[in-house]
Length: 325
Image 1 (cartoon, one colour):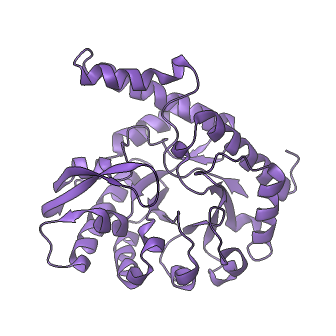
Image 2 (cartoon, rainbow, N blue to C red):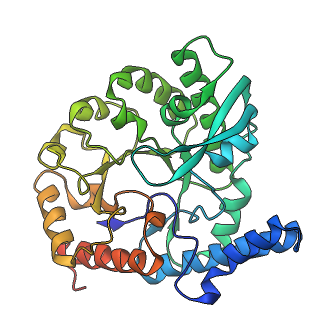
């Protein structure tokens, strides 16, 4: 039973030394440092984040998403036909994103995340490294569209761009890519359109983890089970859900990534709580098909709390798996 992370790690740490990126961003905005100096601050913060994730004992990590201003920003910046618009609230969180504005055909060269992935690959020492991209339904439904005549055409165009990014990550060495798509559970009426989009993404030729969070998957759980993906991530901690008792709906070839610590609540779960949640899942899923994770990005939390949550996650996974923590 492996442990992993989802989304972004906190960019700002507990002490003055761990707040260098914030200072560098302010100085860069004032024109006091050059782009290269800001890049160096991003690199240092990424190394520190990856070290903390590895030191916690997490088995599979992403690159920490330190350069991501928000879950859509890297793609809104890089893709042709898309620009960045006003600040909007990100679902029901007290955080904001810059709304992508689609002005023409979407063009993606597949290189948006390759440099960051290569940097992280050189920085990790023990953990496996996975890639991560935004989900097509999430990007398409949060964007302002001035080009496509229908939601269907917009979602499928975004899916093609996401597939190009996944192929780029595959060429850079990724064997697993998270597709973070909370809109699937926020807007369950679009599940069949999402299925068509993920059919296109599956053609990228790398294992995909379909990542849902914020909302319970109850209404679409059986539909999710038929998606052409290697893994499904489910948030079973932050809201009431029946999903934990229905995991046998998924094929025995699908790995379940269980959101076992709440990444939007500073209350610290104990390893025993994590273990009990895992043991509930193990009644229906074999240990080799069960991974444990935070429910969503840890950047919603102070960095010391994020570290403590990861420690509880790893200890709980070892306890549930019969390994001394």
